[in-house]
Length: 260
Ligand code: NAD
Image 1 (tube, protein in one colour):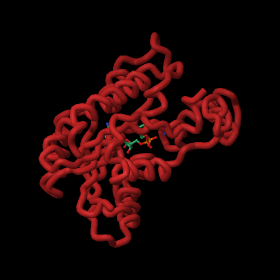
Image 2: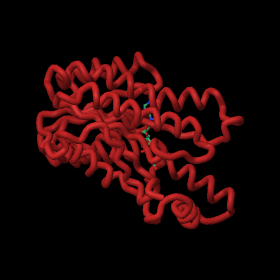
Image 3: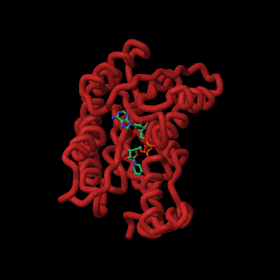
């Protein structure tokens, strides 16, 4: 379905970004990976998902807190693939503390990586999408783009912000073939959430499995983690012709969290 298209997924060396990269790769898209840590493992996983369909994997190590790095990543993607057709703004970090204790440097980093980076990638991606009259922008918000939780001020502010950016980007391009939508997962068991499971286990002196149940029980009625594969399937739907007129939505995949 996506043969000949190129998808740039920020923060795709791990977790949800890697899951979405594999799902888009399976549909034939070229993939530009981004993120820190091991690159060869994720690259091999994406190549395996392509199953020899002829698509190509690239990588750029831009730090998403730096506008100049993001511009370099677009220059690289354009030189290698011609243009970016599908942009998935996924890179994100978390820090947990009450507002009065929140380290200023962590606030600035979360706003830069979880929110401002999506403004930079979107402004750089739109001109080529507008020239082609086709594009897909998918923003990884969170259920925290819709509701709050204590101790997550920067994260909740950034995620509400990205839902707002999603709506405005969708509206400004509403008469074109470019759509912009947000995905709002509840708990997904990635390294980002495992840290919170570990903190709960230590705080209550309980096992890893019991800490997971406690975490889910507090917020997620389904008592199930959403998976990167399920999120990949939703991203593929947003890229399909069936989603041509889905514009500016914030789509929960949260086991009923926000329905309460
Ligand atoms: P993760 O920690 O597994 O992956 C984060 C990715 O972002 C990694 O590839 C990491 O290298 C990259 N990254 C971090 N800082 C970066 C930077 N400065 N520049 C470039 N890359 C950077 O996290 P995840 O759980 O897969 O989260 C992905 C997105 O989904 C985030 O935006 C997160 O807020 C959102 N989300 C996660 C959950 C969850 O439960 N895990 C729920 C809702 C939303």
